[in-house]
Every structure is written in structure tokens, then in C-alpha cells.
Image 1 (cartoon, rainbow, N blue to C red):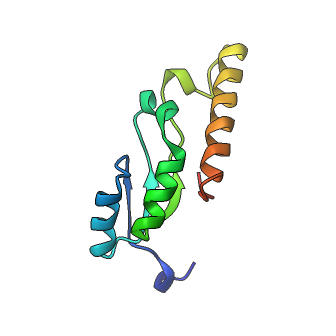
Image 2 (cartoon, rainbow, N blue to C red; image 1 turned 45 degrees about the vertical axis):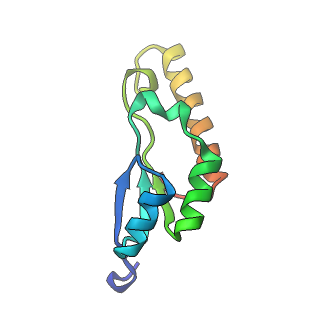
Length: 102
């Protein structure tokens, strides 16, 4: 990507249409969705996608969760497998609303 193609973006957990419209009005054209570990499973993916569309803000990327419950480097095979499965599920949901970067 050439520097002239770079987007002005922020990382945020706030995906309300009002907030995203405010970003767009201030020439912030993209966001990285990043929420606390305990909120990842509560994301309303349909609403996030709809709000971004209404505001004209691109869902540029999704910050995968980090923390004990999603530690893909866990020593215990079962715990590691659960973490990988959880991340796969989240990636699939994020892809469903057009996010392509993780």
C-alpha cells in the first residue's frame, strides 16, 4: 500500500452508529474492532456491520482476543484447542461482516 492510500483509522470497541458517524465526519474512514476479552462473545455482529455501513466507515480489521481464556499458546493441549476453536469462530463471524484483517 502506498502512503497516499493509507487510511486514517482508530482501534475502538464503540460501534454505535452515532460514534461511527462522528468518526466519519472527522475524516476517520476505518476502524479496528477491539473489545475486552470478556466482551468478545457478546458482539452483535449484524449491528456492527449495519452501523459501519450507515456511517460510511470501513471495518478495517479485528483485534483477536487475548487473555487466559483465549491463549493459543497455552501449554495444555485441551485448553489450547479450545482457544483456537474460539478464535476460529470469531474470525468466521468477523468475515461475515466484511472484515478481512486480523
